[in-house]
Length: 329
Length: 50
Image 1 (cartoon, rainbow over the protein chains, first blue to last red):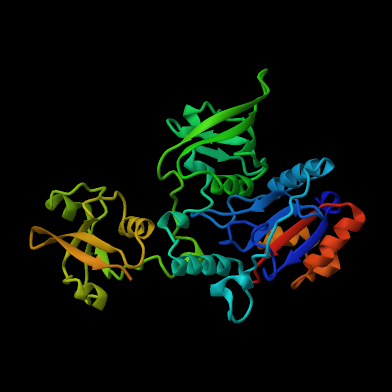
Image 2 (cartoon, rainbow over the protein chains, first blue to last red):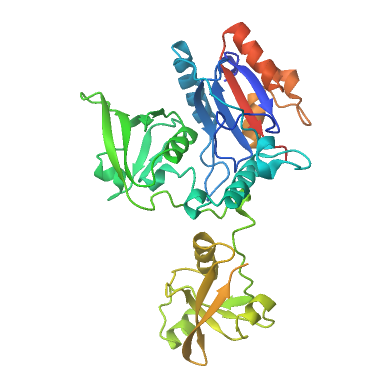
């Protein structure tokens, strides 16, 4: 690794001031991220990234080594430099960023951009689902060789397009891929629906292949609950509750695998305002049921709703089913 | 994650390592200038201090 690292000029920044965000585009809900680029600011690739499950399960030294090797390959014959016209877009130049006191952290950039979009009336809920993981197409990439497919989900868009385990992805939508970060960047740039072209290197005789992948409506949607930039808009549900036992569920005619809980005493004022009483049994939201634990049911709400949304909570009270409307905070 | 970043500084002495001691620059403009001078590509790490 040392020998490989010596082939780079290594720069470490602990804040993101005065960087042109039009060039340095990346998933800012991170604490560690790498760009490989040349002196003309031509970006060869990205490394880093996380998902809802873990902060570093997508990362490994081998994977970084792999991505560095690919960057050096690209550096041997770099594409022509792209000049960005117009004024730089820096974190400080964002309207919501002006007057920010202290260091501007990566996730602050997303918060400023969202605030500016809300003010301009251009904010959409879909915009929250940026940098979707490749699993949204049905593929998992190898952690140590970041462009190699390690799993293909049966019946997924990737499976229908003919991807196989062991395929090495060369590019997605024209963006080269050598890592999970490259893949999520390319998928971030992909359309909300339609198709995307993926270049795949096959080990058999057909060599490099371009495959069209169908993108269904809503394909970018993923679990947002881990993102620090969204903490102010992800709801917290103030249930003080206990799970029902299998026997209690059976007595109520409910599947033992279903997530069900009973509100205890005291009842939080936000819930009391919505009409909840101690003893109410929550069995679902908006007519939907969830398998698992109380945490799974509450997690469903956090993944699918935002602060300000009205959630219809399905409740059993004294043996009768009712729906209580809860405005999420 | 932090362990990965540490590995890039080539060694892990006791206490918090200073990037400059291990050949890391902490200024982007200086990095660009050195990349232009040496012909090497840049490895640019964004790392939020905990």
